[in-house]
Structure formats: C-alpha cells, structure tokens
Length: 483
Image (cartoon, rainbow, N blue to C red):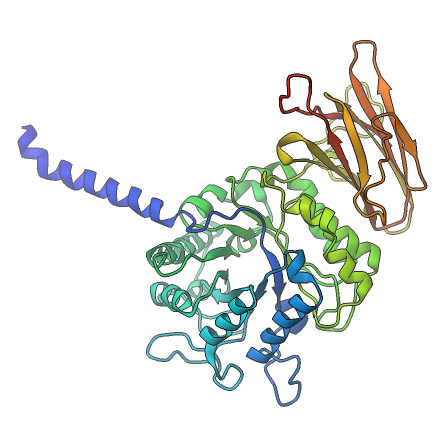
C-alpha cells in the first residue's frame, strides 16, 4: 500500500521542496544594514528628455555624471549620500533583441559605462524599472522579461533597482482589489526570484513600489511576503510626495495613523516615505527651511531612505547643512535598524490631557512626540513635531528613566556638544526646559518641554546614558505626556 503511493508522495515532497527553495532564493540578496542614502532624479527632473532644449536638466548620462560630481564636491558623499539613482524615461522606446537599452542619444556610452564612472568615484548606481507592461512614463516594462532584465542590470553593474508598479497586466483588466493584490504579488515575486538567479553576477538592493499601489491601509499589506518571497529590501508605502506642506504633512499624518503597523516589518527591511524634498523641484519651488528641516528629522526617526530629490549641484548652503547634519543622519542610520514609535499625539497613543482613564486617541493630532532607541539602548532620540500651520506650540513630554543620564544634546544646535541636562539635573534654554523629577521609589523622569515651537517646525533631542553598576545594557521606560 505504501509502495503503491510512493511516487505520489515523492512528487508531493518534491513540490514542497521546490517551493521552499523558491522562497529561500527570493529572500533579499542584500542584507541592507541601513536605509539607502543618495540622490534620485524624479522630483526635480521628472521625464525631461529634450536635451537640445534643456541640456543641463534632461535625463542623460551627463546629468547623472554631474550629480555624482556634485555629491563628491559638496560633501554629500562624505556625509553618506553615495547613490545616484536614475528614474523613469531613461530607456529607448524599443527593446533590442529582448533587452532593455538606454536611449542611445541621451546615453551614448550606455549604462555600464555610467556605472563604471560612479564606481570609480566611490558611488553606487540605482536604476528604475517597472513591474508592468510599461513604465509610468510609457517606456518598456519588465512584465514577462523579469529574468532578462535582472540579468541585464546585473551585467551592467547596477547596485539598486527601484521597481515601480504602473500598467501591471494593463491594470484595466483588474476586477477586484483582491485580484489586483495578487497581480502585484506575482510580478514582484517574479522579479525578486530573477534577482536571486543572478546574484552570482551581482547583488542588488531591491526597492519595491508594491504597497503604494494596493491602498492606504497599512494593516492589510503583506510585508512578510514582500521581504521573504519577493526579496524587497525597502518599499514605498504611500502617495508620491510633492514639494509643498500639504503633501509632506499628509505623509507624516499617515505614519501617525499607522505607526504601529509600520513597525511590524521584518528586520532589515525599511519603509520608504519617498524622496527628501530639500531643494528645488521640477517647478522651481522650495519648501521653507523649517519644513525642510522637519522632513529630514521625521525621515531620520522612521528610518526611511534618505534620497535627495533636489538638484544637488545648486542646493543653497542653508539647505545643504540640513542634509549633511551628522547627528540627524546617525539617527537614521542607527545599527538597530529600528523605527521610532509615537508616544504623543498619534492614533493609538494616550490622550495628552490629564484624563484619569487615559483613553487612546482615535485620530492623530498635529502636535506629536516620537521616540527612538539608539545604539542598542545607550541613547534615546526624541522628536517633537508641531504640524500646525498657524499656531506656535510648547510640547511637554515626561520620560521615565532607568539609569543615569550622561548628557542631553540638541541635534540641530550649532553647539551639539552642549549638555542640556547638566548630567541629569536639567537646564533651561531659549528652546528647551528640562528638569529631573524624582519619586519616592527612586524612579526618575525627565520633564522635557520644547518651548514655543513655530508652526510647521520640530526639535530633536538625544539623551545619552551611562551603563549601570553591573555594566549591563540599560533598558528605557515609556513616558507620561502632557501639553
């Protein structure tokens, strides 16, 4: 009886084995140690392809070489911005012998030569593709060409692939959100498997736009599948960003509504809130400096990739300083690979009044505090955000400690080494009021006030701790909040 069924049993086990092998091979081929940092061309240069009319701003090898030169010249590369990412509209409109090819007029030496140019400067190359039949700009997509496109990118020396999600199965054929979700899963898993097949040629970071195309509800998004089956290192979660406050604040409030769900992703993967809009955009507009600084601080707290969307050749010095602030970058690049959690003002946090029942918020507020553990627990970053457009705000946070404070530093200060805690005793400045609170049971808290924050601005504080007497790593408590 058993022998009679042995062929079927072997077939069944073989099928299981092949699926397990596929999932293993489709895990990310790169173990990403920190969010990607660099330049991405879409926000500023979009699909500008007329190099006769606008030779210094059109999508061309000259543009990306000049961006690479500027990253090095202006200190961005030294600060960690080492990737140059091509976005849409770089290809010819037709494949050649089944392979993607760069537009021969705008990229006369090809993508491999551009990769060599960047690598010689100590930089990496990112490239754009699409999981559908066409890209968003109606250039050839990778649907049905996953294997050959992944091999092409690997052979060219590409380091990072952004795979967009336009025109999958022509989109119009989709009849339900469930069917749409399955189509995205199939296409991104197929491309991830193709990348795994060519990992012996080159390991490439995989940035997926998948979750941004399947709705706003982060609760329903299959982050484990994206990481373990499609091999995505990072993914876009929400709408494209635009260079104005309404767009930026909408993204931040989305994170505030779903901060808990957005933390439940595999270690080594990163949510992508879209490009940094520090600098000019396609229409020549610029965020006010406080808003640009607020974006940089928030992106650092949530461990989003830091991809500059402005023209790095011409970004004004006051904005460049925002981008290269090493204290803020260190929060983003922390070895823990963790995101901040919201402690004030977000959906699901306690109300900021003194209600005895501490009811949970059902919507996110415009005054928020976010907290992020750094360096394995030896430091804590606190971000205070005033998203109100018209009103100043003083936001208070009472943070419970379980150790001895070494120092508190303002990460945006011109004097970042100044200790605002006076070794735990507290201090008052124009921007901060910090005091140590002691309870009878020897529990200590810091009462922290970010004073008179202007509309659409933020503050960042880092609290550093000493180890305890047994030299063990400290753990930190939560907080009690009031405003």
